[in-house]
Image (cartoon, rainbow, N blue to C red; front, side):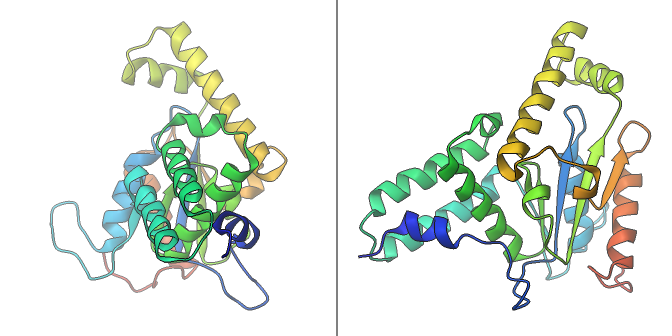
Length: 240
C-alpha cells in the first residue's frame, strides 16, 4: 500500500512551466496588520462573479474568496480522497490534514515551524489556485504562488502610525496595546514568509502595492479590475 503523506509531500508542486500546466486565474491579497483585505476580497469576488452592489443577479462564473470555510472544504476533499484510496497511513494522514485545517483558520498558522505542515499548507494553497477564479487572502499565498502566470498578487500597506490608530479604533485598544499588536503581527508574518521562501518578502514579490491609508476600498477594487483587464486575466470587454 502507498503512503499518502510521503507521496503528497514529494509531489506537491504548484506549477510545471515546461508543460504549461499551471493554475488560474486567481488573485492573492497580502496585507500588513491594520489593513482590511477581507472587505476588498469580498467586493472583488462579487464584481468578478457578475454581481453589482445593488443586485443579486449573477453570471454562471463564480469567483470565490478563500476564507477558512473554503480552505476547510479543500481539506475535506483531500480527506475523502484518502478514505477512498488504499493508503497504509490513512488514519495518520486524516488527523494531519485536520491539523493543517485548524492552523489555517486562525493566527496560530504564523507559529507553525513543522516542515511537513508548511509543505502541506503550500500544497493546499496551490490546489485552491488550480481551481481558478479564487481570491486567496494572506497565509503567504502571494509568495507561494509568485512565479505562476495568470494571476495578480496584491499587497496592502500603510504607515505604521496610521495602522496603530486604526487598530485602536476597530479593536478598542489603547495606543500601547495597538502598537504591540501591530509589531507582533508584523514580526510573525515576516518570520512565516521566511520559513516559506527562506528570505523576507520584497516589493517585487507582488504585482501591485496599494497604500491603504490613502485609498478607499472601492478605489482599490476599481484599480484591480482595470489591471486584470489590461493583463487579460479577465476579458477586457467584460461588463460589470
